[in-house]
Length: 184
Image (cartoon, rainbow, N blue to C red; front, side, top):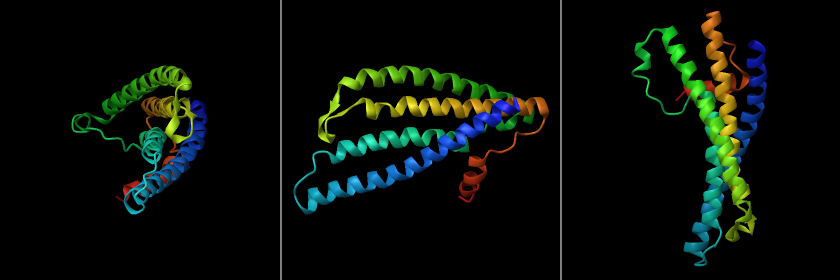
């Protein structure tokens, strides 16, 4: 099981690192696109026809690149009032079942959303340069598949903890980025 956790950790460190850089780029891109749209509309009095739609698609990509990162770092909104009242072992069992459910659900969504994206390949976004909608919609299955891998790793870590009685070694991504979040 430790080998599976290490393999998933290696995969997730690489993909989440790439997603992190992609998300940072997209935040800058959205800010630049929206700023340009506002400048052209209100200063030059000549609206850009593509700025709003491109910003929306960039935000779509941003959401599905950021969601697996938030899942791995444990910063998705959750309600801990009930689960915190259980003993530690029961809490771990509940978390393991939750991570398994997230893995199954995200795997299902990855398959179904790929069908959705593939069906959108014949549609085009004319205002952003005659680009197939597939390239915008493919962010959904990519994000869902990534979340499935992250939750599978978390599930295996929970099971390993239940069997061995000690937590799995923290992967490089969490070790690097979680302390920054803990400062807030």
